Length: 221
Image 1 (cartoon, rainbow, N blue to C red):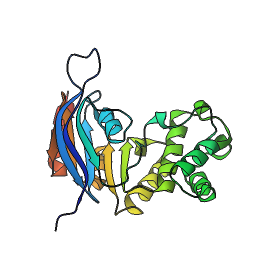
Image 2: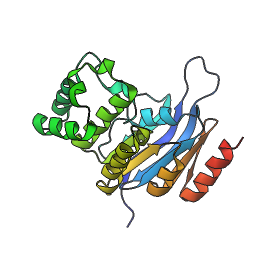
Image 3: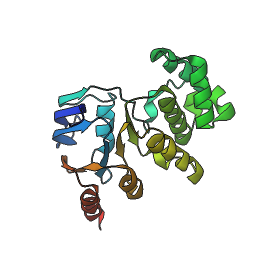
Image 4: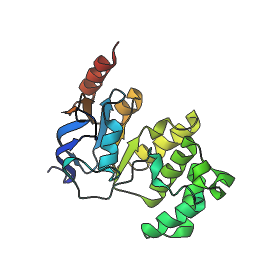
C-alpha cells in the first residue's frame, strides 16, 4: 500500500514584481510520508524560493501547497528569529509557540548548537553560521514530521557537519526531508528522488542517479 501524501503541490508559481519571467511556474508534485526529496538547480534558479514557499515564509503567486503533516521552518533561512532577543529568549518564545517544555528545549538546543555564552547575546549579533546552528538545534528539539533544509549541512566544521547528518538522517530515519543543496555526495547518500529546477521549470526524477547526472550536465561549463 502506498504511503499517504505528506505534501501536495499543485500548479505552484512564483513571480517577483519587476521581473519579466517567473522564478517558478506550473510546479506539481507530491511527497509521501518518509520520503526524501532533493531540490537541485544552479544558483539563482529558485531552490531557496521554493523551500521558503513550502515553509510558509514566502507566499506563492498562484497555486496551492497542502501539508498533512507538521513541517519545520526552512532550517538554513536566517529570517526566523527576533534579532533583538537573545538566543535563550528566542528558544523560550518558540517553545511556548509550539507548546513544548521550555527547560527541556533549552537543554536540547544548548547541547546540540554548541553556542555557549553566545545564547545570552541578541541574535542580531550572530554570524550566519551561528544562526543556522540555533535554527538547526531548535528544529531538532521541537521535532517535526518533515524537515526543510537549505544547505544547512554545510554549516560548521567537519565534526559538526557529521553531527548534523547523524541527527537528521540516522536518528530521524522515519521522517520526511526536502533538501536544497549543491552537495551531490550528501544528496546521493540521503535522497531517493529529486526536483531539478531550471529556467523556472521543474522536473521530478524518481531515480536520484539520473537526477544527479542531469544536474551535473546543467552545471558543466
